[in-house]
Length: 377
Ligand SMILES: Cc1cc2nc3c(=O)[nH]c(=O)nc-3n(C[C@H](O)[C@H](O)[C@H](O)COP(=O)(O)OP(=O)(O)OC[C@H]3O[C@@H](n4cnc5c(N)ncnc54)[C@H](O)[C@@H]3O)c2cc1C
Image 1: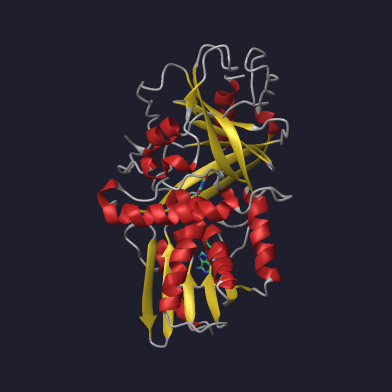
Image 2: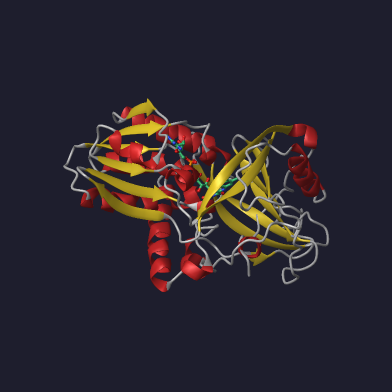
């Protein structure tokens, strides 16, 4: 079973807050206005996929310690906090003293959460980065809790690796919950529907995409962290005769989350230095003794990491519809819609995303996804 299949099969359904009048007497849900002229933005980013899983390693370079912390594939936001805690173990092993200032290079999802975790551990942090949000790949993310998305290949997913991943995911999950209920809603939970034209057992069409490696099924390890999905009988959902399952899903409102992390970082005395490092060695030329490398896909070239493959991703935002509070996964149609604060996010896979670092927006791809979504309404 490949990753796309798993995602769709396991995501559960976004529950339109109710839909038919005969559904527990709840009001009918508001339809998504899936119209191409409501697209206000198309964002493209690169997932830093690493076949062997994220690289967490401590290297010594003379008097300097370099902690590698990159390669989180399609799971960077989801795993961020747990991964940052693991990185902090390596920072501690580097011999850093309480209150010492460390360097964190990169301020995407991984750099920001690493910096905040270090501050919470009593360290001072100086962030060096070529770009900061929203000009980082992390800003283009969909914003779903997907800790197992393109995170490792089956070949590398040993029992030991999976246990480490599970610990990371659980730790991350706990921290994400502490961001619930805040005014800017950096983290929220939504119901959703996964909708299939036929049934959930029929094979998914291939769409001529570039083949991807085999990914392990890690879902069962985290099964109890959210409610399971459940079938929704015909007549109790707005999708006609289609097969529908309802699920409940954690959502990251990426712009609000990034902004909050950034502001918290500065408020706690964090420093920010715009800087582009030309090669991997240059990272250890900064003033700090301990440096954490959170450069995401850029580490592929900075460190000639042969395990890494760029995976392009694109999201389109439609004009916000605050009245829509459910997500939709249209199974087999390569289309996901998410009710984010900054707009209705529509994500779709492109034909040649795997292995591509092409950052050019593809308007036709975005419009096609919106049109497929429109078929549901
Ligand atoms: C379309 C899309 C959808 C996604 N959806 C989800 C999702 O729903 N859920 C989820 O959990 N994850 C998702 N992801 C994955 C997630 O976004 C990534 O795993 C995450 O962005 C990785 O973060 P990062 O901090 O490692 O990298 P980046 O965000 O790329 O940050 C790298 C940082 O390093 C800096 N840098 C790079 N090179 C240099 C250099 N030479 N010198 C100085 N600084 C440098 C950059 O400027 C930047 O600040 C998605 C990704 C994409 C593209």
